[in-house]
Each structure stands twice: as C-alpha cells, then as structure tokens.
Image 1 (spheres, rainbow, N blue to C red):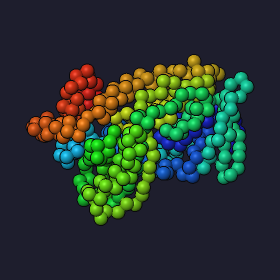
Image 2: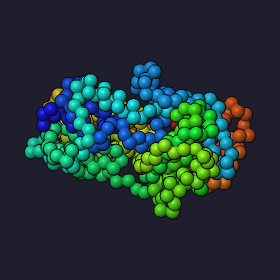
Image 3: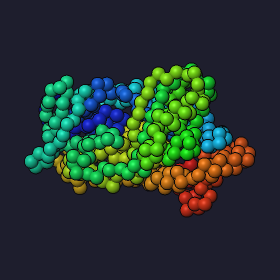
Image 4: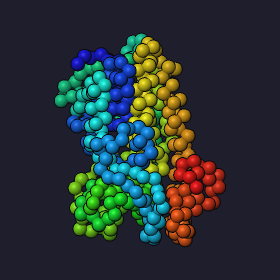
Length: 390
C-alpha cells in the first residue's frame, strides 16, 4: 500500500465499489475507504430490486439473491387490498453478500480496500488533487489523490468539504426503520405496500419477503412528520396488529434522500455518486441499481480524466451529463408523482383502491393505480405512462 493514488473512493456501498471496480479496470490506482468494519454491514435497506435493472447490470443467476417476487399488493388506509395483475418480476437481495461481492470485484480489478477507515477531512493540494485524512484503528494517516469519488451516503460529508450544496429539506428526507422478522404468516412471493396517514404519513410501509416465514418489515415517513410520531411507533403498531407473536431478529434505521438529484455532483477533482448525489428514486426510495449505474459512470469518467491528465470540473462534467441523460429525467418524473401522491387524503386512497378493484383482474396494473389516484392531475399522465405504462 502506498500513500498516493489516482482515485480515492469514500464509501464501500454499491456506488463506491462499482466506481472503484470500473476505475481500476481502466488502469487507475484506486483506494476504496469504508468506515465500517465490514463491507455490507449494517444493512440499511429493504433489499428489493427489479428483474429488468438486475439483468441490465449483472450476469444471470448471481449468488446474492434471497427471493424471487412475482406478486405485488397495495393496501389502502381502510385495509382494502389491491393485488396487481402480472407485475414486473422483482428480487430481494442479500445486501451483505451483494455489497461484499461488489467489493471483491473491485479488488480483483486492482483496487485496494481499507475497512474501518473513517475519513475525517479533505484539503486541496497545491495545483490539483486532495489530501485525505483518515482514522483507522485509532491511528491517523494521510493519503493523496488526484480525484475523490464521494459515495458516503445520505450523510455525505465529502460533497460539503468540496463546497457543494448537498442539503435536503425535511420534506424530502424519508426517515426509516426496519425489522428483519421470522415466524410470519405471508405469501413469500408477494411484496406488500401499505399507505395511509395512520400507517406511514408522507411515505409507505413495506413487507418484503426474503423467503418462507421471513421478511423485511419497515416504514419510511417524510421527515416533516417524524416530529409528530416516530417511525418506530408506526412500525410497532403495524407489527402488533399484523404479526403478533413473530420474532424480530434485527433492527436497522436510517434515512433516504427522496429529492431531486443534486444540481451539482462534480467539482475540481471530485464526483458524488449514489445517495451522496441524491440518486435514489424519490417515489420508492430505492437506489441500489441507480447507485451501481452511477458508480460505473463515475469510475469510467474519473479514470479517463486521469489518463488525460485533466481532473478539472470541466473534464469531470461528462459524468454529471451522463447521469442526467440516464437517470435525471426518470428521477424528475418520479419526484413529480411523489409530490402528488403524498398529498392524497386517506379517503382518496380508499376510493382509488375500490375503483381499481372494480375492474377486471387483468386491468389491475400499477399504471392504472396511479392514473386512478391522480385523475385530478392530468398533466402527470405522461409521467405515469413513461414510468409504469397504462
């Protein structure tokens, strides 16, 4: 190990490991720094992904899939269930194994990885590059690099240290709590989403099965509602009602930026990826596959900049432009829908469920739910069709 690198990646989640792997594959000297003792833990994630995105990015039959999902049910505030017809296939991952595998791929590509390495600060070097201060095993150390890729999550400090505006309003932060539970009576092929002011105001509650009798059961609410009642109170009330007697094996909490993407994700010698760049889907909070996509783009652009000897903001803007083309339009559509959906009253949600259930089973689609719920917002029709179909 040296103390000088072409690229230092801060954060060993899907975005960081993907960036490190891609940059190393292109010949850059890469160091990946992860503050936790083990990459993949703690698992602050519901672990759900779509089949389409998975197949776009990974080989067939990866080893880190826990469960295959073929059904999807929405629950209105009054308890009415809407079972969707032929929803898109999805998977529940084993995030610990998934994140570990991505880090292994980065190492095989030539990147170096340090765990238990907490980045304490960054200072610009004369000319270009950064001096990165790290505390590991209570020992301070310094590394220099031409480029820093910030993949340090929603609480990212890397962007702020570089002078980027990474603030998010309470309205656009989802505060979340999740139980990993055993001993549940549920359909292991069906994901559940529960809505309503008494269930998850400004968000939703999920039940994502990881296999027979086991599931991730969690809730995410808009930060502006958390002052009224804590996520744990909403989650406990649901669990006591729906799964009394089941066991909670693990509890995790965190937050997700359900906002528009950051306006600026690059600076001289710096790129932000994943939750640090607010690249999670604003409607669902899902960000795993977006993080992988953005990480690969960041790694490619950063390695190109190293080869060209130009790590300026102007050179790195190619990453921001590529993300805008691949992710930006979709995320803006999702944000507009989120704003409209979270304004719906419980009565409007109940009426939507009743209306969709009055249709033939083969007409109960995800797109139809949104069209019915947002019938007073015809301007959103194109967004609904683009994201979910009719």
